[in-house]
Amino acid sequence: MSQKLHRFIPMLLLLLAIAVPAAAENGVAIDPAACIECHEDSISLLEFGQSVHGKNACTSCHVEVTSLEAHADGEIMPGPVKCSRCHKKETAEHYASVHMLNDVKCADCHYDVHTHNYWKGDKNKIIEKCTTCHDDHADYLDSIHGQAVSAGNMDSAACSDCHNLHEIKPLGDAASHENRDFHTKVCLNCHDNQEMMTRNGVFNVAVKTYMESYHGKNYRLGYPELVAGCADCHTSHNVRPHTDPKSSVNPANLVETCAQCHENASPLFTKFYSHGEHSDRDKYPILYWTFICMTGLLVGTFGVFWIHTLLWMFRGFVENREKKLALMHGEHHVIPEAYKIYRRFNRRHVALHFLVIISFLLLSLTGLPLKFADQPWAKLMMDFYGGAHTAALLHRVGAGITFIYFAGAIVLSIHFLFIRKDLPGNWLLRLFGPDSLCPNFRDIRDVTGMVRWFLFRGPKPTFERWTYWEKFDFIAVFWGMFAIGGSGLMLWFPEFFGLFLPGWMFNVATIVHSDEALLATGFIFTVHFFNTHGRPEKFPMDFVIFNGEINKEEFIEERGDQWKRYQELGITEDFVKEKPSGVVYDFFFKTFGFIAVIIGLALVVLMVYGFMHGSH
Image (cartoon, rainbow, N blue to C red):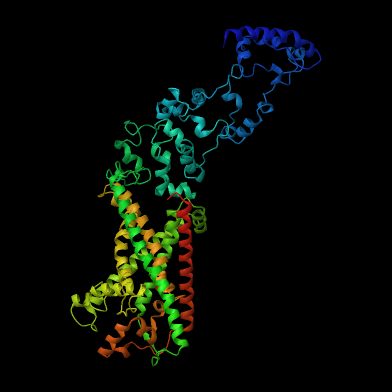
């Protein structure tokens, strides 16, 4: 306080002593100087005059005292001060606070009401107030936040930055949504401020990397109670640099920290990169190159097959037009018994494909919202399922079905190679024979023939039992089980795999699982859907995989070389079906098929929207 102000205050009080008594006689106010005459042992006139309340008369707060004589005689005594008369906003906030619930009143914190001064943004004053009662959180004073505030850095977090000044909400049960949300939300207030973090030289990608993690995605979707928040790893008050031996994230303490959620966490498990950034080539080279390889796989696969699809789409429309013109000019080649039905697939093949569709829909419907957790539609989908915990359960059910049909594919492959009696040759001849789904040299000729047909340079090739794109789909199941299935198991049972794999392998698994799932989903719902249902020759759906039936005209036109081989072997009639599948059966599976296609196309739209408007 300046010397001029020191001289000014007594003069002001003198003026009040002269002016106020006249008003006091009329009951308007009581001279503060008169109050001080009696209360000088507890109130300093100078300190009160310099305080935030110094501009007020005593009766501004002690409104009950309307007569000095009555007060002196003990007839009128002041009651509890009602701060709400002036501090309405603060009172409203305090009314809804945990302090109010525990009968902590204004004066319990503002006990220095007669000497109270503006805090002027000095967070040390807040800490001083709070630690008067909350002395059990003295570890905050030794934390990185407390030390920074003590050193004069007002950017650092003090009690009020997390808990507010007056509207201090109860945290409730430790496992409640509100409590778990609080563990992360208050940290984001500062750490999501890139300008502040840069100004203070703080690791400024913490929020970004957290939000890209499994924990962060669930938090963003609105289910913080299912995952770890910032304070679970870094603690709430005793936040220290990772180099500090007392830090919860110091390498020596990580097993204990991780074990709070992952009960059987091992030293290897703690090698996980909590804030690993795959774009940081220098700091995280393994993550960087994993991401580069997976991105290359996505771009390469989609690039090749989308071009293939576009060329086929155009050429297919032209072919349909050519057929129409040929019919108009009577140039149609009549096939005897064109609609005679032949069996292409057995019931086990239909059942296997049905399981593939069910599992794929479950996995994509529950996995994509997590992949695009920053999208509004993702949260709507999660809420529709009943929460992220339900989605996780359904995702694991889908994974279980995947392992079942993969085991079925292995059994059928073994049966095909070693057990079947109707196929000639040993297992090696069968593996590369015409009935096998294993790629062979013929596929090179078929690919070349299709490209020439796309470019109007040759006739459309005729195929054997399996086309090259069908073989690609089948082989993709094996690659997918290694990439998606393997990484998925690691993320499903991290504590088990953490016993013998370093934690950073989970970072790698996350990238592989996410990108490979995106590749599989995008491929199935665009390329596979077109090859199977959307191409002009089959639109709107090829129903053969559901009933296993193909008529003679389609057989000869699409699988001409297979038809010729069967004729040469004299086994064509062995595959004849006497009657088509039942009406109820067809209705169920056609409905199911169309629903699957509609869901797939809808997910494609959401994926495209997510990439265009999200943070990917």
